Amino acid sequence: MDLATGCGTALITPFRADGSIDEQALYSLAQWQVESGVNWIVACGTTAETPTLTDEEWPHVVRIICEAVAGRIPVWAGCTHNSTREAASRARVAAGIPGVTAILSASPYYNKPTQEGLFEHFKAVARATSLPVVLYNIPSRTGVNLEPATALRLIEAAPTIRGIKESSSNLAQITSLITQAPAGFRVYSGDDNMALGVVAVGGAGVVSVASNEIPAEMAQLLQAALANEWTTARRLNRKYFRLFEANFCESNPGPVKAVLAMMGKCGENYRLPMVPVSGVNRSRLERIAGELGLLIHAPRPEGDYRMF
Image 1 (cartoon, rainbow, N blue to C red):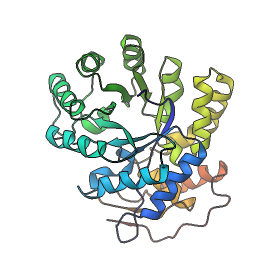
Image 2 (tube, rainbow, N blue to C red):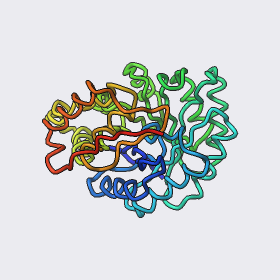
Image 3 (cartoon, one colour):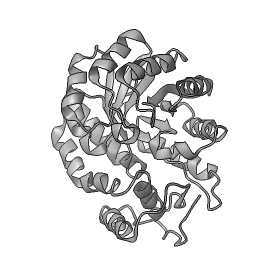
């Protein structure tokens, strides 16, 4: 199965005020994404606060998203762990959930493995499932960079490895991988603010945080870029670039969840160690969202922000 191109949304996990998963809000968010034209959804990625989900909760989140999507677009399941055995086990569990079409797995966090350790880790994860596997390189979160040479070794060693989400913010590194990878291997930007640059050098799209807030607009932006309609793509990028930047004024997903709460899409509830954004950044986010017209029909969010 070829992996999708365009815009995939790294969906948040909405919580209720008591800290439980808000299944109805999650279902509605997933449906809205599909109806807005995004090309796929990532369940249980970084933006989903997945490290705070229990072993029982994360597959439950994946199942809800798959039920809401109902086969209309692909669903990638995030299967990341600093134990290779556990990451491989999660890949097997996710592959058994109807509607999951690919596995997304980030480098082991905290362990800080060598390149050889990364090679063996991802090879084991890939061999645990017949589904396509998308590597996830995010050095700022994991403490280690998956180098292009290692990624190329993995592509050769494990045929199910079909793509990579690149969040190194290093366009030269990303370009190096794109130019050396075999035809059909997908390289995605993991950063909204680099999506156009990655597509311009041959990338397949973006795994987006901003599409939680502006799914239709991000889908249009990537569709235009992939069709070489650069005037439209640049116009949309220019319009929403400050939102891309503001979404990372504090640790993700704090800002994007705050904006979604302002839009009336979910409650702004977190699980520790995530906490609400500061007052200064909240004002910045509300100003930007308001100027972009995202709050026109949204009810005011409750003022009692909680986290668990």
